[in-house]
Amino acid sequence: MNPIDLEMLHVQRISTASHLRTLRQDWNRLAGDSPFARWDWLANWWDAYSDDGDLFVLEARTNQGQLVAVAPFYRETSLFEGRVLRLLGSGDACTGAQSLLVDPSFSTASARAFSLWLIACSPTRQHGWDDLDLETVSPGDEATRLFARQMVRRGAGLTRRKADPAWTVVLPESWDEMQSSVSAGMRRKLRLLSRRYVETDRATFKIAQTQEQAQSMLSRMIDLHQERWNQRGELGYFASEEYTRFLKSVVADSHHEQQLRLCQVDLDQRPVAVGCLVNRGQNYTMYQ
Image (cartoon, rainbow, N blue to C red; front, side, top):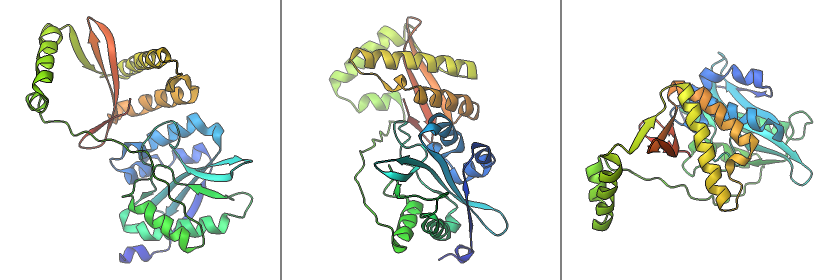
């Protein structure tokens, strides 16, 4: 165990959006290059979905007041399930694997501190809970694994469920390399499409450079998405007012920091495809 890990940490629950805003800088420091764990992403998610429960974020600080860990929970209450703690970003926002945000030097200490606080508070009226649902946690998430182990050590039951797979596609370094990786028939189709649309400037690719351009592309993306799903007789994600409000807020907050980029393909000056890319440090994730 790291010697620094032996320090006692102080845990406090954050239950208001105004208090949550004060953590933005330190929260993003702990999140690192994980875009779906950043304050901008999860605070906007909570703003859109806050009708679903109570804010239940836990912070852990040293004796000197340094924020070293965040457990980004909210509490949802129902007659059937009781009081359930879930991770911010869960559900239909499709934010990928969520996690506790922890300074690695305090991984064991924060897991112990959070588990002690939660077990002690579980029967109380103000901070009580009946179940803890760590949805979409990555198997390699060391911080959450340590936290779950500490919870079990203190008497909590643990049930594991296999999550749906997430796909990662490693793209070639160049267009030539891309073409060489596909079949001869596909290469002929790609060359034909390139001559017909790209070389004639009928097809153009744009990346939003301003907030206004980003919001305009987002509106087009919503229209294209809904049109495609409605043709199949399905509602589509943007039929949800909460989800639409969430993504618009994220674009407004994240675009200027280049954490999220909107891009668009036009054919004959008409938008035919819009993508939402999330910056993950050395690469991007296609979110929509």
